[in-house]
Length: 135
Picture 1: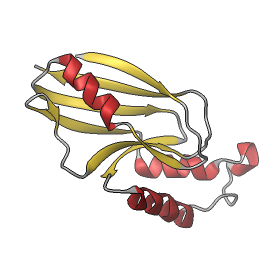
Picture 2 (picture 1 turned 30 degrees about the vertical axis):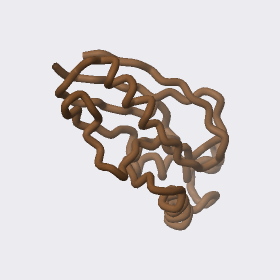
Picture 3 (picture 1 turned 180 degrees about the horizontal axis):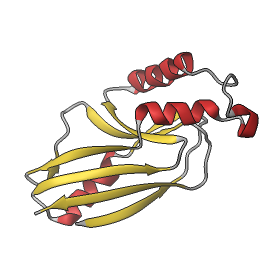
Picture 4 (picture 1 turned 135 degrees about the horizontal axis):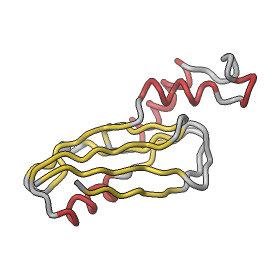
C-alpha cells in the first residue's frame, strides 16, 4: 500500500475539478499492475465523484441539480455557519470513490473522470488522500 495527500486550491463556491491526471500519474508511479485506488476528500463540505468528462455540460448539470435539490439558506446548520447545503451535498455525493487498477492503468471508461467536488469554496487548501493497494 502507498499513499499520497494531494493539496489543491478551488476558485468556485460550487464546482467540479477533474483530478484524473493527478491520480493516473500516481498510479503509474506506483508500478502496480493490478489493485485498487481509493480517492478520499478530506472535508465535510466536499466530495469525490466519477462522472462523464466529454465537456463541461454534465459537470454544470450536476451543480444545477444539487442546487435545486439542496437550496442554500434553509437548513438548521445555516444558523451556525451558513453552509448547511454544502454539508448535505457532500453527504449525498460521498467522500470517496474506489477505482480498479487494470494493467497498470485506472479502470475508468473512455468518458469517465474523477472529480473533486467543491461545495463551500473557494478554498485555499483542500486535501485529497489517494491510497493505492496493489501488486
